[in-house]
Length: 295
Image (cartoon, rainbow, N blue to C red; front, side, top):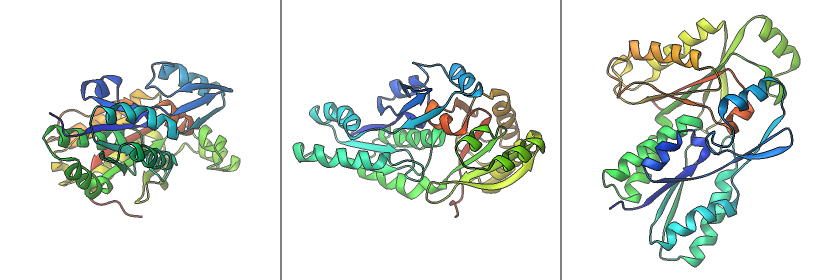
């Protein structure tokens, strides 16, 4: 019997079958597209290809985080069934949802003083966040306690690397992250920004690389540089993409060729509608375990 319930948010960007198979409950963020609100329910309400087409056609997108009540609604049935809970949140560096989770935790423990709810800040996003949930699931199923699993997550979450690149600067311009001039010249010069997540779970630009071909090579090079054991890395590798599967596949092919000891093939998922509202189409992200992240 599993010793605790494992929960997360929809922004961990795994397939619905993953959560169902592993008995993981998730709370849905929401996104607003041209004034209409939708649930970020892993592409079930709005397929990812439709979502990204609408973004590419100029639709305005914004997001709202999981509310305190959403967490209460997800956790209360688990507590009523006698389960303790380990919850992993989207990075506090890009979202305030951990505050909603902590407020819900405080409210519920007043009614369930004998139960436990432990909240872990993933300091990650999309399928990198999903990779951390995968490891929590593995530990739970191996029979580790809630405390043992939480301790492992805290000790190892900054070893989980998140590297991103984008071939489309439109959403960066709309979101105010770059100027109109920078976007114009970046597009003309075929600049593809390479970014990663720092120790606070914030997305930080690291390099401006010209051409998609070079940035695909560069992101694979970063894995060689940082992966545990270098090219002998034997852990998992995930990739997520926003409506650019061919680019994601090109990165996966490089990784699989350079890392022959991977734990299975590279898993490719879609960037979900909430993270994708901010990145737009054309983003590829690479996730793996390695050395500790730096500032």
